[in-house]
Image 1 (cartoon, rainbow, N blue to C red):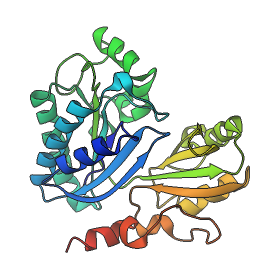
Image 2: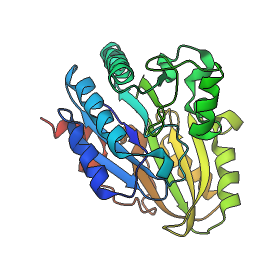
Image 3: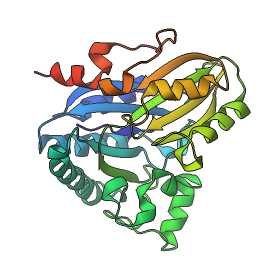
Image 4: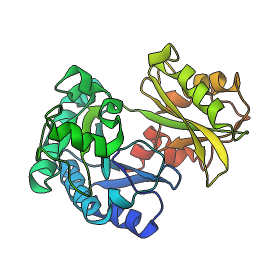
Length: 287
């Protein structure tokens, strides 16, 4: 399974064309957000076919997404910003790593995109976190590569002029989860996000940022939960509710059933369908 993140959240024709280009991988879900300027695709395929799909999808992204005209709040360094291959248990770890490395190598060689490995595939300790690459944005990343501070793991030693770079990994499921606050207080959202982050002494496995969404007219606490067993989503909700009223929640992509255990019944989860958005159910639907 894979969850490529593309830096396009507004143009429906581009988003749909990229979805088709990920074939032969099977399409499970897409989540697009105009404010974030991002679309998250969830794909599944047998080993071998998944890397083929990621490479063909990456080619479509390079052709259609131009960072020079990008609009969106989500931190990014590339048109195909992150390309994680996801494994559900330890028995799948080796094949997932092989698939991620195969796709990364081909994207670097065939599409001339610089690819950096992060997470457990990182070749340097500081490369484990995506935030380290995103400091200063994609233009700053270009300067860091040119200065020799950073050397891509695959592909040319320069940023692609319109598509930037790709961050690739193999990992267990990560849950992207957003909470829209009832108030439009950006500073409050940022303060809550800072308190939630594991790096600041907050919840285990949680990364978070505070944003203001023009399209919705609200502040948002946007999180990535890297350890959903230690920190199910109800704990994120409880922590945010201690500081602010929450109007609505949003799941970006799919989540394992365990992440949703005890989720508060009084909080709307926008667009949520158990058949589509619970990971185990979505995989079961493939037959």
